Image 1: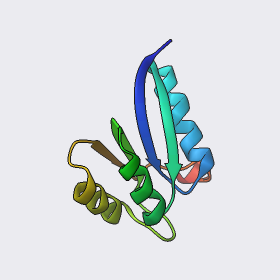
Image 2: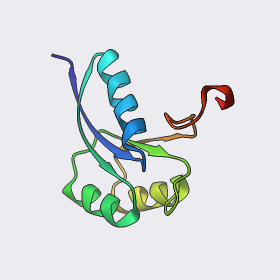
Image 3: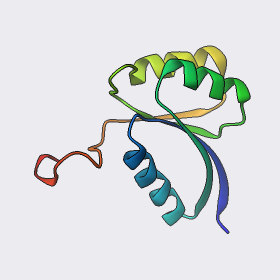
Length: 96
């Protein structure tokens, strides 16, 4: 069993979230997670609390990393925040 980690994933792609979780497990963590893709869902998840880290996609169709960070800081000043602009699972390899 890996190191327990409560992870909030702010991501519009289920495939990208799955890749992140796979990498966390490969790194020795056992993530308990929730994926959200908009401000309302994120707000409810933050209110439930207990997140060790928040991973956030920089650019999503209806929500972005700057807004997510602002929302997190308004509601929770203790969770770590990681903003990613990495290529997604949907990005063709030639454009990564």
